[in-house]
Length: 80
Image 1 (cartoon, rainbow, N blue to C red):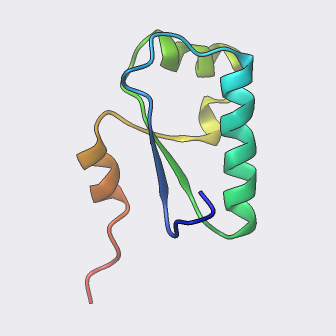
Image 2 (spheres, rainbow, N blue to C red):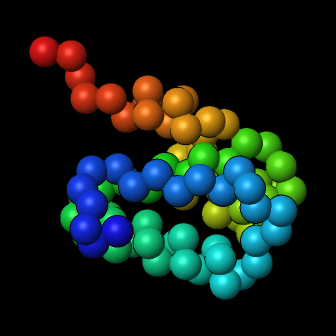
């Protein structure tokens, strides 16, 4: 994270499970990026993992995308 710039993409598609430790890590990452006015984009199609964010009541804090391509398109710089 510290050696990158711009949007940080985190691909969760291979996950079958996420617990409170994982959620806390993502919340902390989001907060740290926010200090630098950067965004966190989660690649996480509808799944059991995605439901955990909903149940925890934090899904509205994240930008979710079904695929990496979708996330990258959403974060393209405006055309000049």
